[in-house]
Image (cartoon, rainbow, N blue to C red):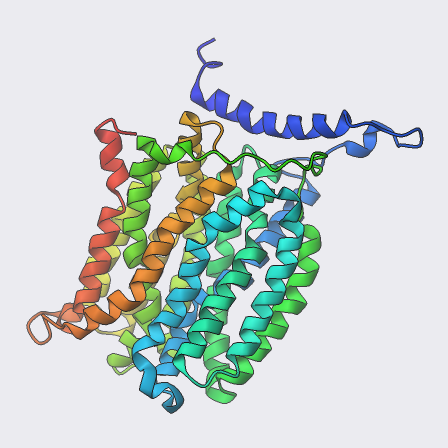
Length: 451
């Protein structure tokens, strides 16, 4: 009897009850004389089966296409910085990349809340999002100034990307119940996988054809690959027969568990984006080639695949704060011990590989965070929770651009310290390490009994 009263059993029943309620609502709807038998409402298998794996593969690709591009922005940043057309506005170049990732994160609560309120709009949202994202890429290829790139490659791309990507989060919650952490890890690994390939392709294309051609080529690629995927990225449960908008509960926002876990999430996000933005520039400052500079971003993104899947699977087995501690210790050690003393390509590559595993997989802990919050607030919807967590990370993505430029302007240890600490990037390295350390605050909170 104790196991029946446990939070794990109650959470499992809650997830499964959502599925049963949706099916019951459809089965109990009035049927006409020619209606088919109830067998037409049999649901595809959850947590496995051909349709579930095809769905997950589609989510992986959507993730790769939408998030892989802005996560590879470091290559574009180096190109724009050295492009005479944008030299007069170079101080805002970093904002292009951080605005695209930041707005997708910060806008997530509003997009997820809208899709929760009007669930029938989820399929249409993906189509509209694909159209806006394509328009943003084409428009950015005509940009003449940095602020135009911020509006198109940054802001407009983020709006379209959010609308295209967000419905998949709701659908994944239906397709995977027992293996949710693993499934989200596989989906989010799409960013790392594309982040391995896209920087190399973009570096080659930018040098040979320029940014205008490459942005238009990526727009065409996005349309050709995304349209077929939308057939597989679909809901598992039948749509609700009622047109009444669903109530959105935000009571979880005031729970101690959520506040502590979200605090760590925000801290970690403040410094997370700095290496992916500045590794190519840092490598060039050491006299390395353009290809070697691009390689650092590719290595970081490639091992984040391992981190996403590995840490995601761990959240299905151990407490989320334990997984966060693993991510924190690995990230802090990578920054202070590897990046801080990296003055050659081999050590810089080792840092990129290590940081990708531990810091790149941090977002996979969100499934564990959601599970812990829903233990206390069973009525909290996964989409709304995901949106608020994404917004917390978005704070870091948005602040990162102007903050990093300010840190670069202040060079307190140039010529006074060893390794990377003695370069113009010394303050960035220390800031990244400190924020990664603060990202593990939830583990301390659990030891104190706050979680």
